[in-house]
Amino acid sequence: MTFENLKVDINDRIATVYIDRPKKLNALNRATIEELHDAFKFLLDHDEAAVIILTGSGEKAFVAGADISEFSEYSVAEGEDLAAKGQEMVFDYISNFPKPVIAAVNGFALGGGLELAMSAHFRIASDNARLGLPETSLGVIPGYGGTQRLPQLVGKGRAMEMIMTAGMIDAQTAKDYGLVNHVTPIEELIPLAEKLANKILNNSMQAISSAIMAINDSYKDGVNGFNTEIKNFGKSFGTEDFKEGTQAFLNKRKANFK
Image (cartoon, rainbow, N blue to C red; front, side, top):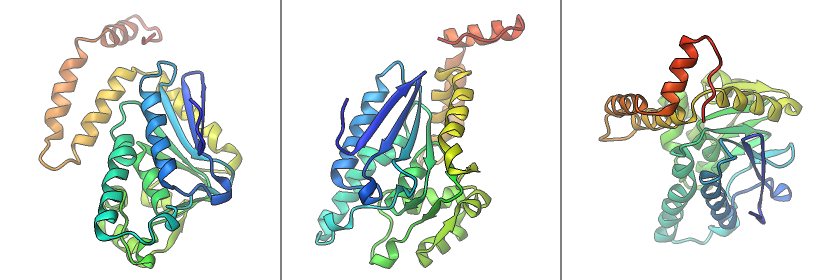
């Protein structure tokens, strides 16, 4: 597929999705959000794309925020619709994506950019990264899941401070907070993401998909994540991956998962 605001490369079962609006610091506009949905929908059914790396073009920004010019005149109803559709099409869609998604944060990840990174299954960052939710300085609140995912990742108190002050934190602070897993020089960011992706590819993608579902269910109101874990654990026993994994272990060889 070809896109106006994205680039998608697929090599050795790793798909790298670049938000590609460098002159706008990769800011999210409506067209980019729609293309992100289309890209992930395409990757869902693409057998050669087993792990997805999500990043921004250039070294200045992952995503520097939403394109404010598009919604500065919105009404109450339009604002609510903007958040609802964005969450459904992209942020919740990526969070619940059955294939692993790694956010490689290069430079600024602000507002919708940080919310996009938080929707990935985990995050790594370059040492020049700056992360924050500055929406309250514009008279609004985060609308793409920021008030929900940030407390889950860094704790309620730190999330309250970050949102109330509208300030940025650097990459090392983000790592200390648990917001990102690794910090690396900018030139090593994608190689590190690919290294982690290849470690993931050594394992059963079917089992990983089931684990993603079980982990996510533990954060959903009215859903018992333990029950999901039990159900998906049981289902694993009926898969070819389980047979291959256990036989490989018992015969002291590397598993060859399909």
